[in-house]
Length: 440
Image 1 (cartoon, one colour):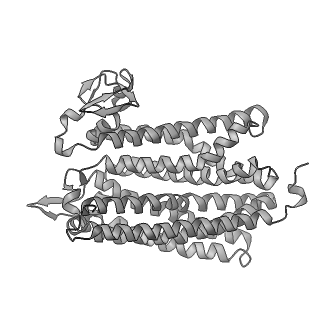
Image 2 (spheres, one colour):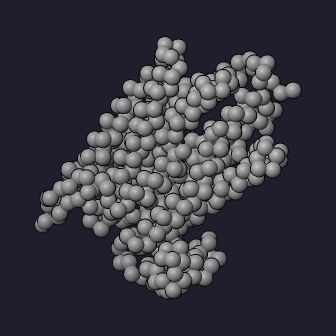
Image 3 (tube, one colour):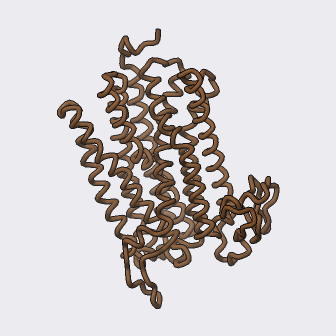
């Protein structure tokens, strides 16, 4: 039988891992859809308008299932982790409350946007989509700022184990909030862009190369491609933050066993018996990336108490996967940019389109790996340096049963979501293509 602490952690990981992908589309898809509608309005091109209609319908489906998974997560915070909410609920309640407001604004304007296509003037309909875009991004900001607080707790005093002097604004705008929220929001737009584009890349490989499908690929892929180099810069910012504020997590990411100057950057490797083996080491690179100097000292795992050391192998490989996919997507973006610079057209190589068809899955896997780094790298703390995960879990028995029930719910949600989206896609494929959209 699974221990209750392990069951609680697995349930939270399943819920968060499932929700984060749907939520990413909730952040990025309104803006991509609105941009397509705006282009159709400005150019009079019916292909843009068709894309906006199609994406809006998919956005409605994803919002509905995201609302279900988000509700499950909100209940899990109280049911699985009462030790966290009892002690620190007053501290982190503000971002959750603001996220609730953003969610309702998003729901209201999504309803207006979906059902007012033929009932509002085009300009008014476009304006109704702006609050939808803002609310989606704001919702992500508020939720991630609460998670950032768990990495850098601020805004309270702890006196004899009791929380006092609560400043919820200082808690929400803690040192981890800027890099972590920026990293997540950019990632959400990349998941959206590459995810939508991958559908049209598959269609391209199957011979559907009319203007509708070409634009369906080019618009979201270009948005994601432009953000790929931005994410590399933001990722470097986040790594420098870890070097200053969470050195144990950075040491686990790199498998750095000992504190040293001129620390190497390690690619690959297996952490066994307190040593990183079989890794490709780049001399001085970690010191340069973390502190800007080849002679800078980087804290290693020897400075971390044994009972506070994160699971190094899991954290390190999750980080390696995230970075590898990120640079792969960056290379794909560069390929796309080079083709347009040379001949004002997309790449002709089948290998590009095969890679583009996998880019959506790759971006989603990178986000999942990033959250593994964030959450597992903080262990054994649920509130860094303040409250251990084992102290926050619900002491009541039977949490494994809840894990099984939630797993069944997500299995049903997954099957239903895929079935509905596939049916919508097949219906769209049967729609006739306008004469001006056909290839010569």
